[in-house]
Image 1: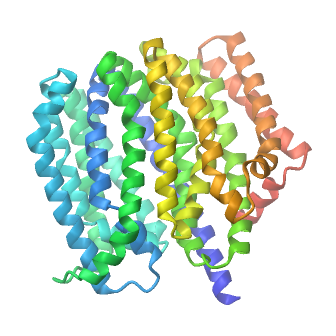
Image 2: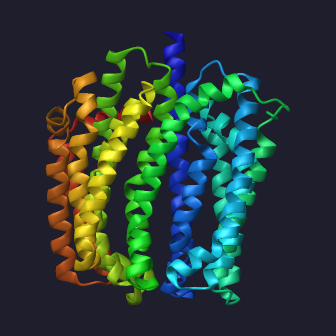
Length: 477
């Protein structure tokens, strides 16, 4: 009982620290992005977005699923950690060498010669980050989110100051490059100084084989996910203008604040917690059901709320030269609202060690998504965004398939749990959107439509006595 209470305390404490970190981090990043958006033209942001796929894919290879495997192994040893450490360093160096050599090819892909030097400098962050990869994993495994919170916030503030200063001095796209690099360097220094663990000069074939058996399937899954997650950026950057990619990225990043970021908080905390309960199916089922309802209660209104006030929000924060991003934001919100349901269902498979099923699902969904993308490309950016909504809804069926077999949590059962939240969030969207349309795109419209949406949703939840309110109260206690 004492161990269970301790685990619960760590989980709740972890949630609060992760919320604090991500909340502060995203507010800081949002403020910095607003300032930079007024100093740097949209096409400059688009240039950075064009290269994201290359560093993201390299990052997947550097991790190779070993961090998840290391967290999952409760009795990890010095030999295990050292093996992962040296593997990570070597792969990071190899990835950087490949990116350095192939940088001109990336520039040719988009027809912009300047991208070659930008990619070569940006990729240095991969090597620097790999030096503290295991230390960061150990902080997550120990649920020491307090330290990670402090480091990430300090890194965001200091690197943001670097980016703003360089943008003010008219460094243009290079202000964004050095801002990202400074963030990696600063947080890496903090993590290295905080975590006392240091690698030994050993490499265990046994440890490597064990981690590779689990991690290789995670590598395949995350590689597919990363490529698919950036396929819109690749397509838009190649087919349309770099400014169009900047508009799409701006809309996408705002929806990530409402969807991906809160979900990653839940995953980072619940994964090490539920790994300790991996042999208790009843406890897992109860935990996942509560997590799904709570995630939907928070994230559905955040995503639909953003979509409802998209036009006044973009106009007030980024000026009217970014207004096309509002059209995309109001569509993407309907796709991203389902992200936590996908992620939490898939998290169960990882906890149970079924990375093979995880990979199978990723393959199926990516084939489906690419097919929808190919159909919508000629129709324009907005049609591509609507295609992502369709893909997200279809993916619900695939992601809940195995949970329906293993835990009795079919898509019908999950939607039954989520239906009250979905209906209330939908009512909030309609009320806020009508208010925004009536008042225009100014600050008054943004304030009034946000207030109307908040009153409708929170008031409705209180009137109909949503159980998630009591759940949140218990977490606060």
